[in-house]
Amino acid sequence: MKKHIVIPLIILGLLVSCQDYLEFPPEGEIPQTEFFNSQDDARQAVNAMYGYLRFWNISAFNYLILGSLPSDEILKGSSPGDGSWANDYVNFQHTKTQAQIKDFWTGRYEGINLSNQVITNIPGIEMNEGVKNRMIAEATFMRAFHYYYLVRAYGGVPLIKEVPAGPEGLVRTPLEETWGFIESDLRAAIPDLPETVPSNELGRTTKWAAKGLLAKVLMYREDWPECKTVSDDIINNGPFDLYSDFYQLFRPEQEFCQESLFEIVATQVPGEGDLSNSQFAEVQAVRGQFGWGWFVPTDELADAFDAAGDTIRKKVTILFRGDVTEDGDIIGGVDVMEGVDIPRYNGKAYVPSRIDRVTGPYGSDQNIRILRFADILLINAEAAIHTGGDAATPLNRVRTRANLSPVSNPGIEDVWEERRLELAGEQDRYWDLLRTGQAATVLAKYGFQTGKHELYPIPQSEVDLSGGNLEQNPGW
Image 1 (spheres, rainbow, N blue to C red):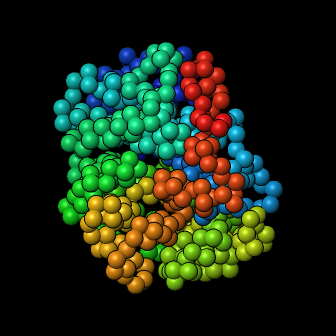
Image 2 (spheres, helix red, strand yellow):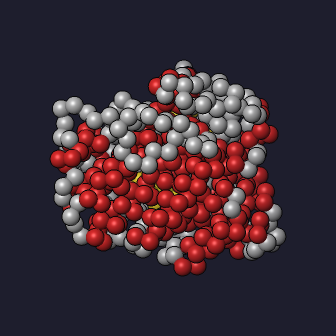
Image 3 (tube, helix red, strand yellow):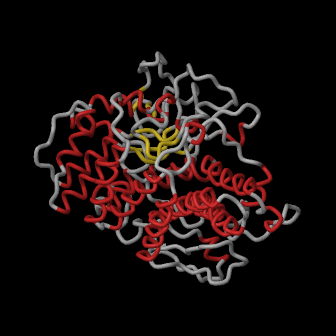
């Protein structure tokens, strides 16, 4: 799939509405009843489901804004005054009417609709049963994937389980029931997913991707015994290991290496740039040299690396102006950057200039690493602390790659700090601060208010669309 997935325009027109996630039948397009008739139709629908992951509302601005700007590790960056509205998220001044709040919600529900189209329509198609079951399992995983992002951001949300005909019954599902639905979808998907995929299908979901996300869901649910069991399974029975070179890990050649459980595929397809590219790397890249220069590491993150003596991960994660990368690129960019004294950029989103641009934007074929084996090891370590198991072994596997001394008897704070350094700039820190109860302390100086900012507001436009059936989150 890395080099072969191209989304048919007609499928996206059929399956994705730009207006709202309820997906009323569009006019002037092929009716769904005329489309889902063959195995090839099913294949195109599944391709559209995967291809949508690259779109702006899934893997670019609102994904990075809601998932990183309110943390202590990422600032807006860019030139002073450019997109100054984004500082509302840094300073917890965002409101229920802002576009990014709505786009995050709408983008995920459009993704859920694509999954539901597959789950609802493919069972009736006469086709190979094994292929059919796998496609349905992939869609079930993908639905859980989108709900996972929604529940962390908004709490309990409406559970749309099939292609809807209208807005009747649009109400929020309780938080634990929402988490339970995500978990059940992942468990339902696992039996029919393959262990591995051939090279031309890289990016399609495997059993291990589903188990990896399940382990992370169990971590959020604080089901520590089951989290330990699932993460043990991945560590002991999966085909994974840490990639030895932390710098090379994030370069294009190491996409789908032994550390990868799940990635969003982006690739340069000549003449199909709007369909095949992602702007994930472009918006974070060196301003004026490669890209926009947004989403830059903070001084707090740099200080945390220094305090740990972590020179390897710091050098990879933070590209300072004037640095020379291992690929020979001199990091230039702007002289003055908003929020920091020394301009810097997220090195994990850096794509060397030696990579040819085929379709235009910088880094358009940079995959988005969603789930790495290092994350699983640290999930396992955290679960071990809660269950009385061995947390030192998985924790120190991660530390050894960073050339850091082992911790003989780690506590929970050791694991949290290791997650901070290992996963920096990968859109995990903010959600970790929330789930571990650290946000009220760590983020207070930025404006975090207990009882309000644990969740984003439900977009006011969606509350209005529901006729008031959608209950707003506390404090909003």
